[in-house]
Image (cartoon, rainbow, N blue to C red; front, top):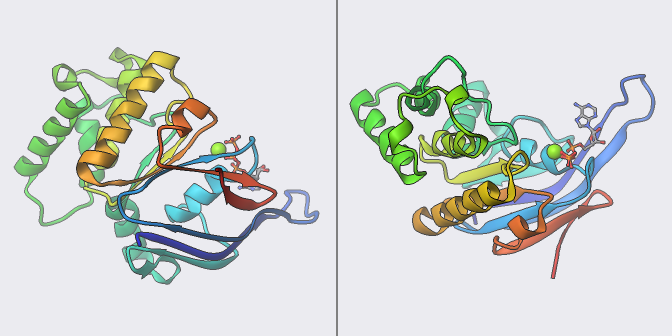
Length: 227
Ligand SMILES: Nc1ncnc2c1ncn2[C@@H]1O[C@H](COP(=O)(O)OP(=O)(O)OP(=O)(O)O)[C@@H](O)[C@H]1O
Ligand SMILES: [Mg+2]
């Protein structure tokens, strides 16, 4: 099992000091290595919250999140940084590429914190990844010179550069037209199948969700599998 969530609860305090709002309530969830799943749910239902907790960008109030055999709540700062950088890869709705860096440099950003790695090998891997997402001819362009779909494919390459076991995508096709969205989902599905990366995709689009092996929905603070 790659991911195991037990009894996870999360609420946010109201900014005006009012009652806390519960977003996730006693969630239990298990994913096997190599699975691909989608999470659906209305706006504000807690999809990003759940993804951010799994990616250790946010903390649960209670419960346990175990990834690849490690309880991520037990990590110290150093282990957390390594986890965020190497065990998980993130793709967001907006790509968050650095505008002043080239595409190749952007893909290499997550490797900068790593020590004892061969830069030449990493650069080769970045080039191969960009080739695999169909951007071999754009290595030295800057994000502003790419289309939205191309930028999102750069974000996929960047998320994969450190060889994550778990890829977390939060509405990765949200800013794309249908054709580009379709291509991006093809790419994610292919990566999942060819490289065995476990994939969690948060989406509003049913056609995106239906490409994943299992589809879940957040409803009333609970995560339920759709038939
Ligand atoms: N930092 C925060 N402080 C207070 N409330 C928050 C915070 N982050 C999220 N929330 C609230 O938690 C709820 C869930 O938010 P979340 O971003 O997880 O929803 P979502 O399902 O991803 O929605 P969307 O589809 O619009 O992206 C919302 O009601 C939101 O207002
Ligand atoms: Mg969200």
